[in-house]
Image (cartoon, rainbow, N blue to C red; front, side, top):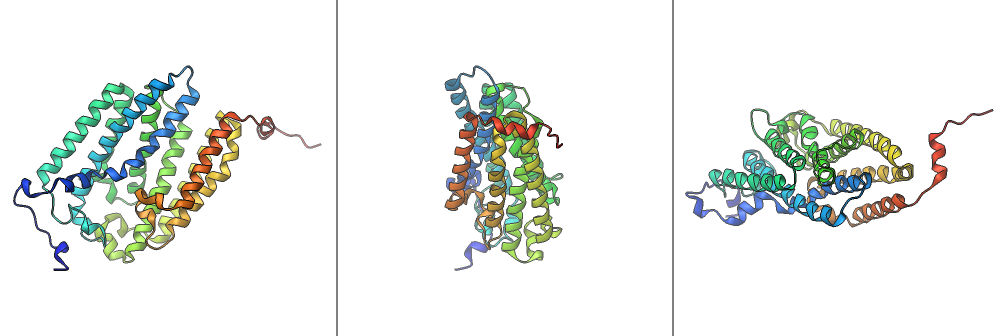
Length: 325
């Protein structure tokens, strides 16, 4: 009886599957990740002029709902198409799809309903928002569905999944500034920052399984990764993100230069978390359990708000050439 969960028992009919299983594969507990929409909104408000904040916040709320629907559509097919691989994972084998507790036809119905609802709400917000929401949905298909299935391709798995970060930034941006494009430096920094987080997640998963053959059966890209390659790639992503973020911050407000030590500590702290055995970095939706790290993020956000209104003229010395006589 103790091994009953490891046996795959396909259902005889759609009615025998529990609704809770379909809710589970939509992963509403992962919706917090759509907070990455918020920086795009805040940057757009800062850059734009004469913004109706009340209306913008209302549209932002609608936009976050639409983004959650699209994300859940992507999660739905992700778990269904990963069922065979998840059976090789020590804990993910307990997921509804891996246990054969859901029906394929209903999975695709759920994906279609979530997609149409998300895109419909996005179109009501605006054409720019709709285009970004559609791109987020397409990225989910490219990531999960053969023959492309980027999640199986070494390094491309990290880069394609983390591309959702700048897309989310654009979703927040378009709420305020429509179809205009934000500075490329912040978009690229957002992408590389997301790649760092994803590479650390892969590293934590790889160490947790602690068996490359088993890891390769669970995730195809793990056949080619090593702990060293994953750490080295995360270091590259962190450095690239920091450089691009520095370009953006100095260009738009010199006071933000003082945030760079916080950025360095942000990467270092997450790496520290990722280096633990059975790290929470495998499950970013549980990051709230790292109370000290969450407190640090709150302090960083408060510092950002303070530097947005505090002028420090002497910092301009860093932008001026200095002659030594």
